[in-house]
Length: 214
Length: 175
Image (cartoon, each protein chain N blue to C red):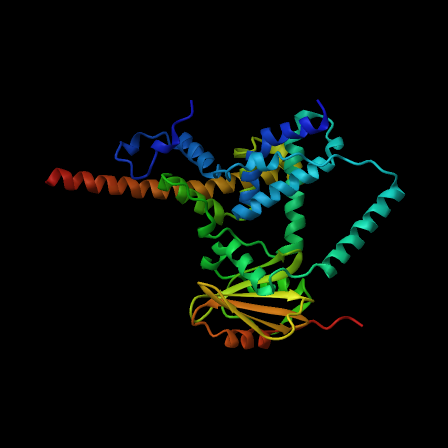
């Protein structure tokens, strides 16, 4: 019979020497591997899946072509609602947890993520806490967080999107600036007191557009 | 049973095991959930290829494993070891389990993966070898070494706890 794992703590004052160490170990191992499930995971997964569509191969190709064209059209036409900065603010609040990350992302990963949007890192960044490809309003972006002077600084690069020049914004917690750069827009968000201009210079000194093969 | 009902049943039966497998593969709660969702989506698209229900578990685990490899190639070319802050902490859980999770997270993926498949997935060494496309002896060796490393930590921690227990008892006797 399986033992009740939650009663077996190392600091337990009960007689530890009487434990059956092998079965204890296996029970503890299973308990340790059984990480808790996210709330309502099954419910989210059990949403009605799409019905399979069986079509002739030619129709399937035509359908795919239509989807691709529609996606490209949507990407080109979709306006930024409320301005880029507003969308970036909203995104930062959605992923607020990343601001408190305190591990260091390897530079190889930083380079790899920037490479996916056609940018090349020519010089290492100071400690990068998080970097990942994100989608904001359907547009692919790079989301990077590193330690600034006044706290965590978020840099979001939106390739192919233009703000039409420098713009600044703020809310109750953050200050932000957006600037057209690197063939897109660079939005920098930091805590109040952060030197955003300094961060912009730091980023632009380290990243450049990758040269395209001839 | 229609395909939709069949699919719902697969989710109900295997979502927990798949999520935990995904978690120990990628080390992030959110990424693990995304991985499970993508895997089930792929499973739905290929549901016709699942001939026998008895093979469903291995089939789903294989899909998730391939999905993880695909996403790793696309987004994160370097496997990041699970950081301590990503280790799931349940309120009220004991320190022994938390400590062991940290050690499991530090195991190389080559050792961690067969261990998860065996302990959580309930797969035999032969099945794991088939799933991971490895020799059965290799799987046996990795399982042994994984357990050896974890047991070593467990016994050390246990010895410390006993020493602490003895010290407390000695102090109590002196009083």
